[in-house]
Image 1 (cartoon, rainbow, N blue to C red):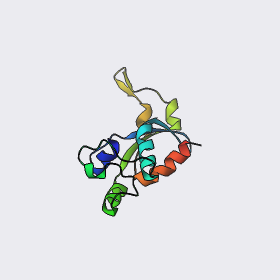
Image 2: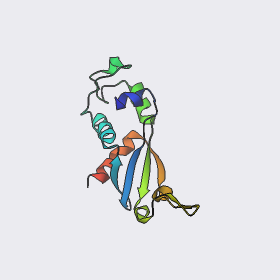
Image 3: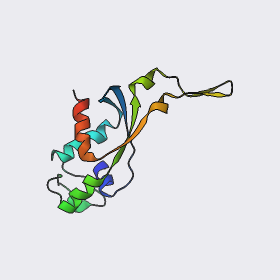
Image 4: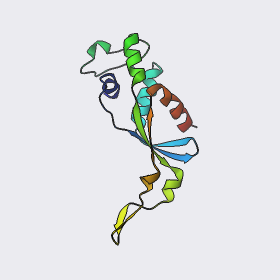
Length: 126
């Protein structure tokens, strides 16, 4: 379970975003993880299927003890952002012994706290 991984402070895979326009993002990979975070923070996703934190089964964010909430609020999830101008680049490959630039050379690596992700999802839903 993704939320339990955050509770345990286990590394989670990054989400991949494409910046279609300035500050306008499209989720390429990680939509389910983003939805889980949003729904949990909005108290619409009670925890279930927990293996280690079984005492939190059935709780929403608001039902969790303050120490658990603060721990979750401190967690960060990385995001790789592919810039719009990168989509026009070429795929990384070797050509005549020289490297051809890969479009991800203009990618940004971001670290976003779960609560800040609410704004990101709102932008993506426009």
